[in-house]
Image 1 (cartoon, rainbow, N blue to C red):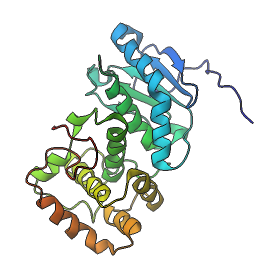
Image 2 (image 1 turned 60 degrees about the horizontal axis):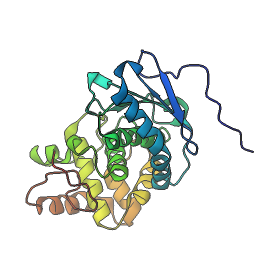
Image 3 (image 1 turned 90 degrees about the vertical axis):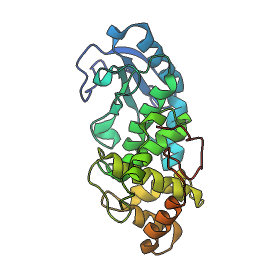
Image 4 (image 1 turned 90 degrees about the horizontal axis):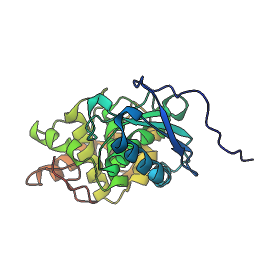
Length: 262
């Protein structure tokens, strides 16, 4: 049985935004209700309208990556962190739809692709169903999802070069219990690039990582995908990474259009 979506009269419970929430519209398929901070004027409103027009495409791509349908969400476009170029990032409360479906994304004046990418970064975490949240594994996966749906509109967020510059420490056999460490996230970005170069696309990687759960390592994901011993993940990956003259973006193994330098 289907029911028409009716917008709630109550304001969504945004993680940090406390201003006026101006409703812009709801996408017909994914049921993403889009809001904007009206004090930002026409540039932010345009971002919100562009996101409204793109939300169903993003949600469809996200569902294909995770192999499961999403749920309705609310999204507000505002100057997150005081920024209006997308560098404020995005936020939500938890990595599920039940408590994380009220999503904040930074405005990016004149660049709607960045807003869509930020939306996907949080939407992908909702699709993780409470797994991988707050870990470098989940952060890397969400950033790869955002890159994949937006032609890498957030190239300036690249972290794999940071990992390389820090001497390529091993975050394959151990998981970093934070999503705020550029070095461990960068290791994850490069590792997921490598996995894809082996023939495992995101729509195989994402469900495998979610199934393994929060405490799992990238080495375990490698073993689950390849049926090879997890002990081989790190030495094989490190040798491949060291063979690259210089890591300058988040797709050093060249699988997609993720090419922009950080």
